[in-house]
Image (tube, rainbow, N blue to C red; front, side, top):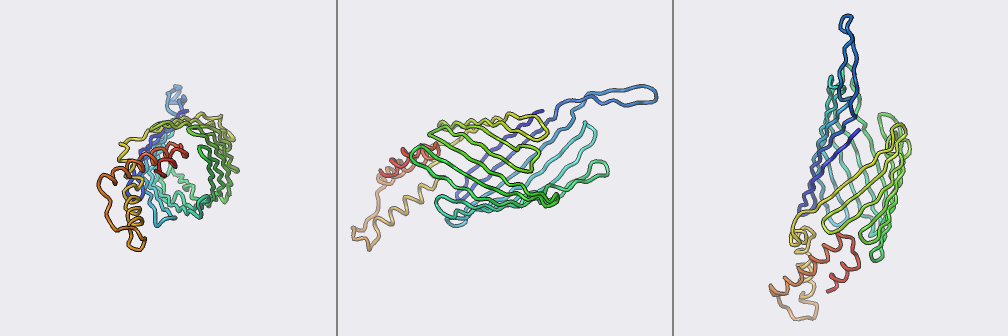
Length: 287
């Protein structure tokens, strides 16, 4: 059994777009059938699924984010019959405080075709959760609780997850109740510069445990990353605050040289923050 997925993210001024492609291969099997009195056989792929999706998310104000995905999938059984589906997801993320986030999502709203004469409903579900993250220097700890209700099956699945990180290394563990696959997950991730590597071991109720590997690569120059992090906007805000008329300071504009220096430090800080080197990022911001 093999599962492969590739995701590409494209940041925008106020959000981001992502494209995903995935392939699931259940491995080969042998089919046997009779043609007259002759026994025939053929080696086929037991099941092959292909998924493609496009997602978009953006911020609304300072604390609210909204996102949606459009997904298209096709499943083939024994190289004999195919079925396809189209579905959409939509979600909201609210930053309730500096340490607490709230989420709400509706998943798999759509339709599907049938294998032979049987048409299966999509796993339409509604979920909501709360998460919290605290950090001190290069250390951070994150905790999340989520509840998913599969409407067609009338099944509620609570989930819980924990993650701890120090500098560029983090470990995570999660548990999902009332689930056939991925009930218990544990893994780690390593971030270094523009590269991320992750590993997860997933245990299901019926299937054998799965080893899941992931590699992430960030493209773009430091200037582009700084701009995507809102550096130019932050510099403009600082300039307005420092030299506003009622501040008691002389009213003047910031020179191009000073702006370049401010952008340099903000760019360094944004890069260090993305690498989870928080204490170094704060030191750059304070410059």
